[in-house]
Length: 101
Image (cartoon, rainbow, N blue to C red):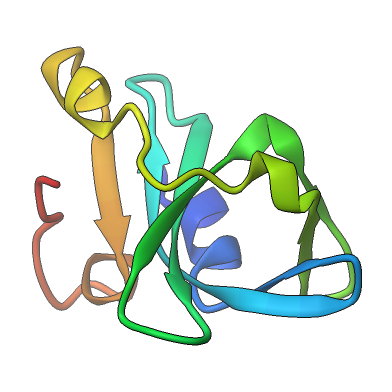
């Protein structure tokens, strides 16, 4: 299983209707290596939001989404219980282990 999809998403800005909402701080991947969703660090405060991958469109080094698709919380506990992994920047570049979230 490769973290390449997560590496491509980490650090990307997330925009809705031309407004920057935040930056991808972590990516949730299923047991087959598919992307489930992203944790987005808010551009305005320290809030972590959740964006389902299916609700995002990858543009030129930016993720675009409807503001209605950005959730206050995500199904991360469910993901973890079913074997999904949370990939953060340190893991994507090989400096640490994935954090459970």
